[in-house]
Length: 196
Image (cartoon, rainbow, N blue to C red; front, top):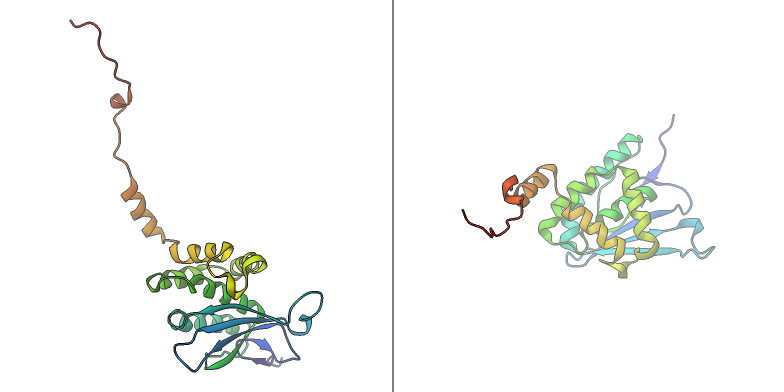
């Protein structure tokens, strides 16, 4: 059995496959651009050749790059495909892995720096098919670069950055708990008309 030839993060080495690119500029202040390329299907039946899915601020990209690389490479190893790494310029990413990465990028593109570790933790905890579903929900109406923090993109950001762990939920619940009310205190108190 021969190993399937791929480019970058699992992109089939064939003529114009559907894939994503992650454009990492050499200038460390420029945003990282994630683009979906539709390959041979692009330009027909109303489908564009490509769509810029998001521009991730460089600080946010730096915070997610290593963990994203680790997760994508684990998935490639499972399929016995060559692994890759991020470098300046265009980094190709297989179509489904690109959708998963795009969900993470959407989650952090408008998030505060202190929320990015939550986004990473929650993104890693999602199954691939859950990431694909989130991508498909957002991509339909709010999947372009100008749709930052709108609709499903905003929902993804909230889900990834504000979704607490079980321990955090327990702490929030204990902080929100109201003191127990005694049964006798719940009865209405009527004024007494007659005194003994």
